[in-house]
Image 1 (tube, rainbow, N blue to C red):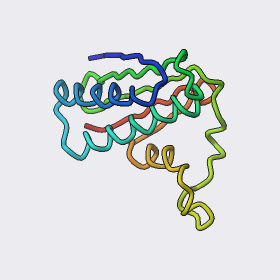
Image 2: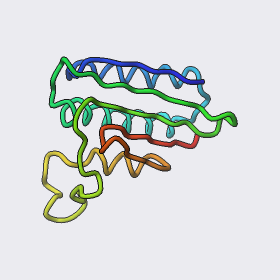
Image 3: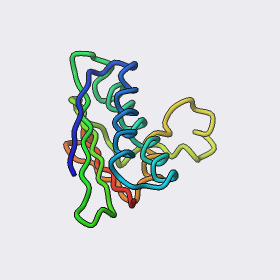
Image 4: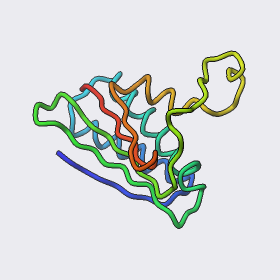
Length: 133
């Protein structure tokens, strides 16, 4: 199984990412916990792609795709934006005292905690997340 969607970088389009994950749940047998983990990780990645990657430019798009491995035990979710990327190796730790009260900066942390593995490419404009299902 392999599927893909693309949408403009408008905040209201986050619902498209959510429906994408709901559709996956209909096609792939996964626990509620895995579904919830994927939902949080994809919405965080899509929000980051729209706001940080594409700078809320509605003329730029976000692409989400997924691939299920042959054993049907692993699903790879990929989120791409059209931005220049970012320094994903130097993101402030949101769990440190000086960052606890910040209103942002938790998305990548959550994605790393929820996925079994996370990989960046294209200077950070693409993130691949791997989940055990």
